[in-house]
Image (cartoon, rainbow, N blue to C red; front, side, top):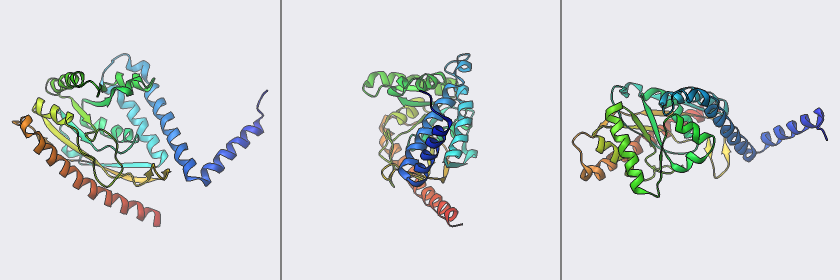
Length: 273
């Protein structure tokens, strides 16, 4: 039994009508679009990625596409502090974690910092085909249930920081938060920074005021990504880790509050104009 053109148009109109009236419908529809577009932008270039597997440059074209559809979905970003990026050496880049939409944030950071790789939980690897594409652009997958395996993998990346001038991107909170305060930081990224005697570069993203998963709201909003100056870990030991973690957390928390207040004011002004 075939579906007539009229029925297809009717279904399309009904879908549009529901999405227009319901914020919950818009929320799920936008996230559906986000997932589909992410898969297309990540998987589409895979044949070309196979020519240079595990190369950070494989993510540059998907990142460009990601920035574009982020704007289409209503999530616009501006990047500040690019003058603080030094591509001549490696280091650890820390980014606060809010949502799956942080993939768009990474698409802005990735081309700026140089030879980049990101740390993700091992479960992402099995999200075929996205996991395969992530592996091809050099994502480091960590098995959080196996501390010895995770430590071995991260130590290899600590070596890469010095030998390949790699920048390793971490979400130090370990899980996403959507409140006014950053969650406590995990030790893994700080272990890498101290082990490699390199630098930590905090990157703070303003609160996603346009997104509320509890109320199922996915609107439009302007967001700010700020790259802060590097913090040297030269000469530090594991004994210095608690003080270093506290220092970086306080720094990023203060910046998070300031940027979130600013982005909220910008968005409110935009709505009223």
